Length: 67
Image (cartoon, rainbow, N blue to C red; front, side, top):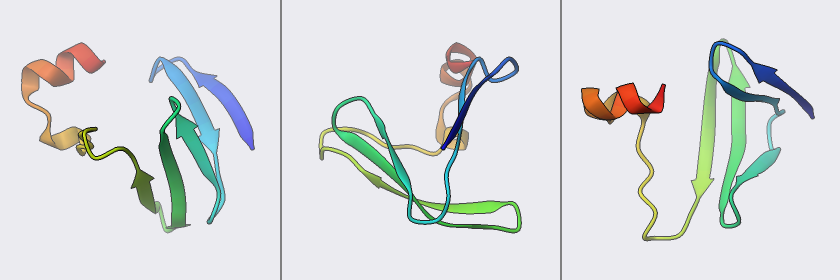
């Protein structure tokens, strides 16, 4: 796994292969199901009370606070 900091995104960038995963916090697991042609299919395993949203679904004021 390659880990580096990205100045534009302000966070870490992880390189993962198909079938590999990483944890966000103690109880959220993100697994790469497939990555090809500039697209990735991800599986997210999280507690039922944890909301998981695509970035484009955030309201504009929420997007500003995330960047």
